[in-house]
Image (cartoon, rainbow, N blue to C red; front, side, top):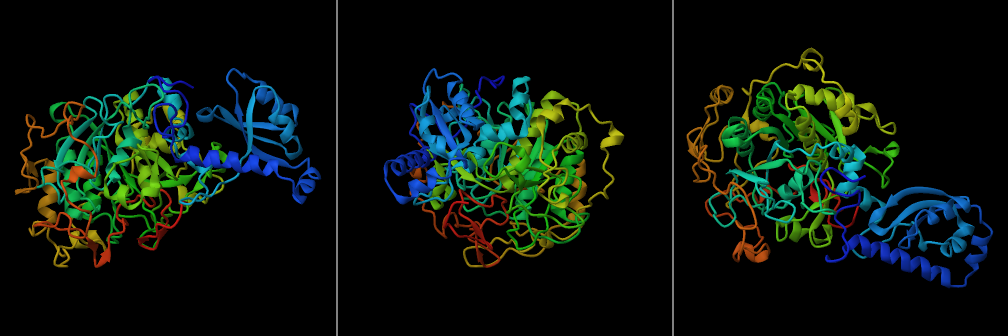
Length: 604
């Protein structure tokens, strides 16, 4: 189906023609070569194959130009069945009797027939069907976003605040007024050469999933391709950030949600800690709820069991907001076999995820030269894209979905958006109810639902107060300076004492931010007002002459001392090597999670 923005239903991240063929094509080509070589050899196994002519095998059938429906008819004539079409390779998946393979290969309109088996390359395992379902166009099809695009809804006019590691100026995010920079609250905010930029690689990946858009037919597209990203950078090149920085980022988004043409209706947060204090007093929980009550749909990653428990991360523990778990399509486009992804935190009897969205091997925009890009090169898909798994990716999908709903019905409250997504979700029959909440989102159904009344969508949870401990909100996630000293206790990254009573009162009244200051302290040295937007948008003109490569960092190296200076280096979290447990991007292209470290050994 062709969408309203002129994007055909093909798999993105893998392109033909002017671009270099990416890794996925290499895997497919190896499969073709192996299959044809096997057919050319004489061996005792051939007799065994001939004796099992009735056994059904899965194959990939490629068609010749102008073949029409002849190849599909040939499959059916052979007693087989036609599965999903893969426009990327001008072919389709089919199940056919094993004894009919030779005849099928010589049928009219058939270019080739290849056994649909998983191929192991030097750097990967099982990079076949799962790779297709992780392409953004297929993610959109799984959740019904492609039909929403066809109806004319693309997220236009809706701003999504991305509290993350910044955004890089890469293709797919270069449209006029596509990215708006909020303040840089990270440890890199005082370095002009990387201020606002994503040196870690996580934020760019999320931005692509939410609202990426090449602006051309056949190009990359996110879930809400015409939505705008408001980037609030809180993490440095290693993903390190303190809870107090995240609090300030959320607070800024709340207070500036309608400034100077902004329309922040959605807030995406992949950050989480293993805090265990009750959500009703936790400061981070209070911050996301404050945003919710100010009319912003807050979408939070549920977590990936990276802390060693099934409990959702904080602030996903707050039952008012949208806590998202990850689903795994198991390499097929048929949602009937989808399950809760093995990495997704299940929650407990008190709090589980509200919804699920695809989070397995999701292909989004690559941030060349970033920490993740350099450390996990196996995650690269071609020159422009990167593959990652986790509830981070799932949350980004739901943020895009919320933007589409809000374009359709701008009057919706956050409670109504949550209700619509829940009542229209599809239960995954192969996974326990507690692990999936309402189930996997179904945008096409959500768009068709009537608007729930205020009473129907009202949530009866105890309101958060934010009067708890900042230190307990951190859980075990602490940033450490270059001398090995952890930031602990009731103090922010500036050493100021934290007073939850004062802060929570200011947030509700909207007076914690003034210019470039938060609670009286300057964060990045940039003034902020309705008339002053440092780095407000990017475009080709803004970034002309600036190459995006390892040279961008002006000789800085990725090492334990990077960006230390007078700031927290974020090298360790409570004495452990930074592993990414607070950011819910569980795996980057199959570098599997082992406890709290990246094993870097295999694809998923």
